Image (cartoon, rainbow, N blue to C red; front, side):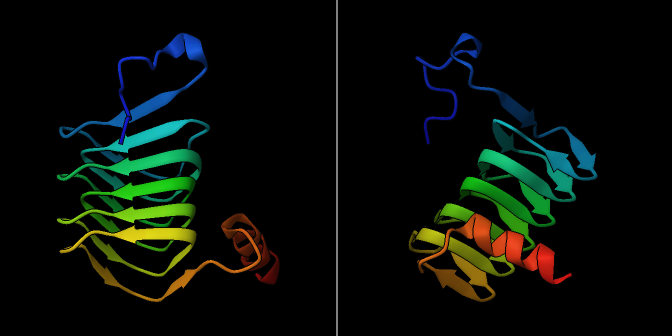
Length: 131
């Protein structure tokens, strides 16, 4: 995953936000950098570069970002350029992505729209315009 790799630092311009295992967050979280969730987050995650849900982490809400790596649980729709569902992970919701990897044992309950001519961000914009 490379989330906290040795050559990453705050001087490089990469911004990391963490919801640790002891934390509970409720509300919409707009993240310009990367987000790691090891605790519980109830609400949407918007505009993230990378979202990583740790093995004990849980998001209840929609997730939008460039890359989403789920090792825990997501209950909501996921829209990203790249989605990775790890072996012990569960996604309950629809997934829209250009690319997706699901490890053996990873669970998805919902519809998946993978690939296509338009990017995942274009699909989100269309959905917002339809409302």
